[in-house]
Length: 631
View 1 (cartoon, helix red, strand yellow):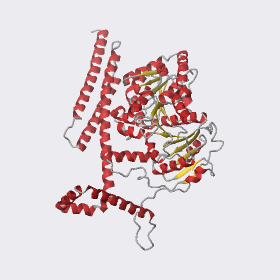
View 2: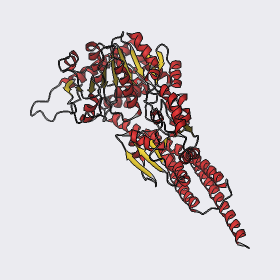
View 3: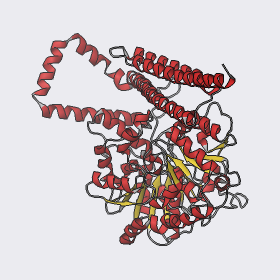
View 4: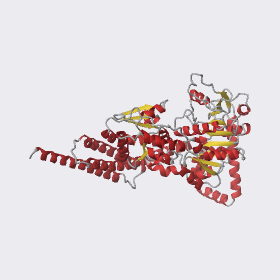
C-alpha cells in the first residue's frame, strides 16, 4: 500500500474515531438522562442520584473532549465544521443536564429553608407558651372535639376571643419592650426583645478636593420637588440598575427639578463612609437611612426636614399598614420581601419627609417600595420605576436553574402596581405587559440614555474580546458557559484572541483558561471598551433592559449576544448586534468579527441614528410629559 493510501486510510480511521467518540458521548448522556429519572425515591435519595449522575457525565465529557481535541485529524473540507456542530448539539444536551442540577440545588435550598423555619418555630416564644395547650389537646381529644364544635356554632364569640388574644399578645410584647433591666440580685435577665429604632441624624463628612476630582455635582433645581426612594446607592454605579437610576436622576436635575434621594440599603449592603461621601458630592440632596435608624445626610442642619426626623422613634406600623390580618404562607413570604426592601424605619422616615419636604411627586425604585404608599399623602402622585416585570422571571429565568427569590405572580405584581398613579416600564415589550396587567395606573416607557461616540475609534487591541458585568446569577452562568462551550472554539479559530473580564462577575470563575484575564472593577471603563475589538453579553435569559448591551453599543463596538441580550433595544442598534441561538453560533460570530471586523465608516454611519435613539430627549420623553402635567 502506498503512502497516499495509508494517509487516506488513517484519515478515515480518525474520522470514524471522532464519530465514535461523539456517539459514545451521546450514549453517556442518554444513560445519565435515564438515571436521573427516579420516580418514587425519597427526596434525599433522588437528590443523591441526580448529583452522582451529573458528576459522572462531567468527568466522561471532560475525558472524551480532551481525547477528541488532542487527536490529530485529517478531514475533508467542511467535515470539521460538521463535527463541531454535532459537538455543539451534545453541549446543548449537557446544558439541559445543568438545568437539572439547578433543580437539585433549588430542592436543597428549599430543604434548608424548611429546616430553618422548623427550627425557628420550635424555638419561638409562641410555640413554648402553647406547649401545655397542645399537651391537653393530645390527651383529651373528645374535649377538644366538643370545644371545636362549640366554637364553630358561635363565630362571633370565636372572633372576639381572637381579638382579645391579639391585644393581649401586643400588650405583653410592649411591656417587654419598655421593661428596664432587672434590679441587682434578681437573677439573670431574660433575653430582651429588640426595640424599634430611633431616627438619629448625622452629617455626612464630604470628601476633600482631592477626592472630588472628576466628580461633578448635579445642580439643585427649584422646580418640581421629586422625592426618589430606593435600596441602592446609584453613584458610583457598579451595576446596570444603579447606572439607570443615576442617569434618570441626572436628567431630572438638569431639567430643573429639585431632587431629594433617599436610600435604605438591604441588610449587609450598607455602603462604606467613603462611598456615601462620594455620592454626597454628586447629589446635593442625599439621605442614607440605616436599618438601625442611623440617618446620614448632606442637608442643612437647620432645615425643617432634619429637625422633624431627629430623635423620632419608629412605631410598629403593622396595624397602620393593615398587615395584621389573617394571611397565607405565600402572603407571609411576600410581606417579608416587602419589609426587607422597605422596613418600618424607612416608612416612618418617608412619612416625616412627606410632611416636611412636601414633594410634588414620589419616585419609587422597584415595586417593593409601594409598601409605604398607604401612609403617605393620598394626593401625592406616586410613580413606580419597575426595572423588571417580576411576574415573568420564573418563565424567562427559572428554566435555567436561576432564582433570586423575587419572582411574583401576575396577580401579586398587579396588586402592588395598582397602588401607584404612574408605572414606568424599562423597555417597550415590558411596558405593554405592565399595561395589560394593571387596572388604573398610567403606564409609560423610559429606558436609559447613553452618550454615544460620534465616530468609531479603532481598537488598540483588535484581538480582545470584552465582557463587563456585575456578579449576578445570570451573568455568572453566562460567563462560565461561554468559557466552557465557546472560548475553546474561538481560540482554535483565532489563536491570538484574548478575553478580558471586567467587573465582579470575574469572581465566579474558578480555573482561568488560557488567554483569559480577570481584571475586576476598573475606574476607566471607556479605555476598556475602546481597546476591545468585540464585546459580548452571554446572558441566555433575563428580564428588563440589558444595560451592558446598550453601554457597549454607545462605544460603537460590535456585540455578540443571545436574543435575551437585545430585548427592548432600539432598532437603531441592530447593525451592531450579532445574535446567536447556541454556543457554537456564539463562537462563530466572535471568531468572524475578530478575523474580519466591520469597517469604521459603516459603524460611524450607524452611530448617528443610535445616538439619537439613546438621547435623553427621546428616552425620557414620556416621563417628561407626565412631570409637565404634574406642574
